[in-house]
Each structure stands twice: as C-alpha cells, then as structure tokens.
Amino acid sequence: MENAELPAQLVGQVRRKNPVVLTIANDVTADKVADGLSACGASPIMSKAPEEAAEMVNLADAITINLGTINSNQLVMIRAVLDANVGRRPVVLDPVAVGSVDYRLKIAKQLLADYYFTVIRGNASEIAALAGYDSTGHGIDAGGHQPSPVPVAKQCAQRYHTCVCLTGATDVVTDGQDIFINPTGTDMLIVNVGSGDMLSSITAAYLTVGDTPVVSSALAAKFFSLAGANAAQQAVGLGQWQMYFFDELSQLDSQQLANQLAKERDDNNDK
Image 1 (spheres, one colour):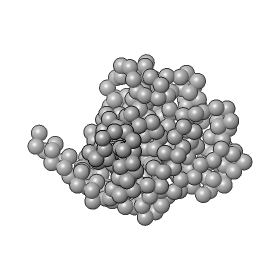
Image 2 (cartoon, helix red, strand yellow):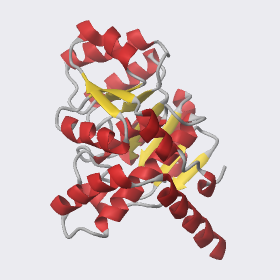
Image 3 (cartoon, one colour):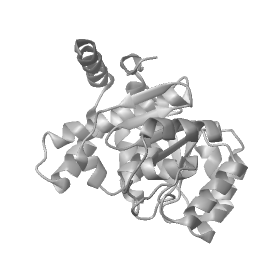
Image 4 (tube, one colour):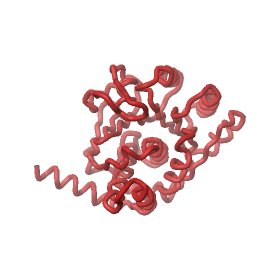
C-alpha cells in the first residue's frame, strides 16, 4: 500500500468509536496527552495505582506505556497493567530518552523482552538505541548524529517483531516490511514539549480501528502532523500554535486528510 492509499476514513471512525485509551503517563505532559486524546475523539484515562490496574485494562480499548518520568513505583504499575492485559488490548510503548539514559534503555529492553508491544513510537535517537545503533541523543530530543531513519526503523521493527513509528522532520512507519514515509510536519511539533507523548497515545486510539498496526500508525502520524502543519499556518509563535493545534486536532476530518494524501500523490507523480 502506498501513502496515498492510506484509509483516511479512520479519522471519522475514531471520532465515532470514542475509544478509551489508558495511558501510563509522563507526569510532565499528562494534561497535553489527555487533551490531545479528547480532541481527536478518544477518551483518556490515567492511573498510578497498581491495585486498579486490572479494572483499568478492562475499561480500556488500548494502552500506552510512557517512560518519560519512570521510577520504581511507576514500573510496578506498568507491569501490573501489562500483566493484566496479556495481549487483550493493543499497546504502544513510548521509550522516552532511551537514547540518552542507560537506566531507561535497560528498562525499555527488559519490557520488550517480557511483553509484546503492538507499536513502538519514538524519535530517531530512541529508536536507534533500541535497534542497537550507537546513537547520541540529547535529552528527550533526537539530537546528535543520527543514521538514516528508514533502516533504523526497519531494524528495530524486525528485532522486536512489531511496528515502529519513528518520528521527526520526516516520519517513518514500518513493520519491517511495509514502509510509510510521512513528510508532512512543522518545526512547532519539534519544539513543543509533549508532541511525541501525544502522538503515542493517539496512535493507540487509531490501533482500535485500523486493519493492521502499520496502517493505523501511519494514518495516526499523518493526521497528527497535518494538524500541526495546519496550525503553523495560522500561528505566529508556539503559544498561539498550541491553541490552533488543539483546534485542528478536534476539527480535522477524513475528507481533509484524504485531500492531503491525494495532493501528495499528485506531487509525487509530477516529479
């Protein structure tokens, strides 16, 4: 399937289904994630109590595990949720800063060894670290010298037998075989703290409606980046962009996304 053939109708399906996404959140960005999920038509729930993990999984349609503010207590909660899930719901792993911090990389690799994740969503540094590359991340950002994103994403997907969404100036989504390239975006998504966290949980919402993880993830990335690009056309700075961005997340529909995909197809045919 080519990028232009992605099923834009998933945007409307998510809004109609209103899937419940359980996010084990990054404390820094939890409010943005909740607002982003709500804006795209999903219903956010979050928890820190292992005692309610099984009930939370029963309520959820999809799960996101975010390592942004990981500590020993949160790790207990993460394992409680994953143990209760046992393959029942799609799960997205957001391996925040594993390209920079050995402790986080160790935790991420152990979780990937112990549990199956439907999608890994990370920046170039994070995905490279999980794939076994010698990457030089800078905090939560990609930073430093990075290898070409396509082979990095493919290697990571093949290593963990999953779908990988590597995000940056150009997004790469792959299950190790099929590859989707998303050139749509804006620098505002890079400088806005929490963009990746939001996309990880929105990806989880899209996993509840698509036929395959790679198609659902690619469509989620396209939807998210188009909302960001549209907002950037109206904003003069980051604060104003955030306001317009949430407006775009709440208003962008299947037809607008289909038009963007058709435009990209025509542009490619003209080259």
